[in-house]
Length: 455
Ligand code: CA
Image (cartoon, rainbow, N blue to C red):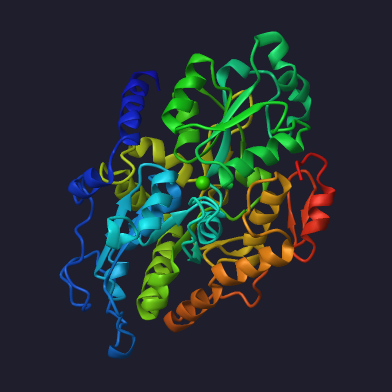
């Protein structure tokens, strides 16, 4: 690995700085399959899906939308829907997928909307759509958004710097809790961990992991938002200790001998909700047919992504310079469910351990369960994160009922004739690796069962 690690590192530092404009300018190069030239179903492209099901009655009100994405595995359904012609198939012939520099840019861009040069929606960590809707992370400006689908489960993990090899930093962290808590007395600084944006998924995953092991992420360590490239550089030079991150970073950190994987999120919470498709409510309300067309296309892309025989082509498409700009060799193992963990841990080799987009052994991945929105917001209460007017669980449930449009998902899936449509808005009781259970009917009981928390 050492001979190509320098190259990959340089490439990935460059990737972090790629602008949305550059991504547009570069579109279509790097060996992507030819895009379908027509949505009539008679396209000459061998990659075009079969006949378009769009009738005059369900023709979309508009054929364009601008969707933001972050170049990590979570965004694959949006890129595949674009590149494999699924948006075209459902009449959304002018969808633009726009690379966002980071989560803060995505938030700022959706706040101004595509009319102002921003985006209409796209890929989000949770509960960003709820926080944006309530003005919590937008300086009080409420921009109502709708959650339309879950994009992916799993594909994230906790990476640790190689300076901690052999110290017992693994899924069950309890054996290393004293080492982490005493780190300051022996090193002159606290154990330092990073995520890329506060109060959303990757912050939650690493907090859960620390707290389950007896380390208080609010007081025993420093935990902060740091850009990925800076975090990885810090892990390399010994100033950053842990990183809550998503594929392809975990593989890359191990391949480049920067550190090891302490845990994958699929070990912390098997088949957990990860990132979501959400769009501004004003766009959806004005364009209900286009919304369902968009959803059908994303759902069909998710089904395509989950076929093992399509994964090599998926990697070819998303690895391209205009998308992830990551070598095929780095992306292939996680897409096959293969993770080299490092630090003496057995490698993981299980297709169901990698990112899954449409179905997993618990059922649907794509359907946005309200019970999962509730977990993210309950976890926000646990850590005392700002929630604006969501002052109790009744208020939280009201916001979920407003923001989560599982009804639109259900309608779109039914119209498209897809199977695997859930009958409940709750996935039921969730069990974490440490035995803690989250019963969506009793979020307070979950909070009470957690020993380490702020609230
Ligand atoms: Ca993620």
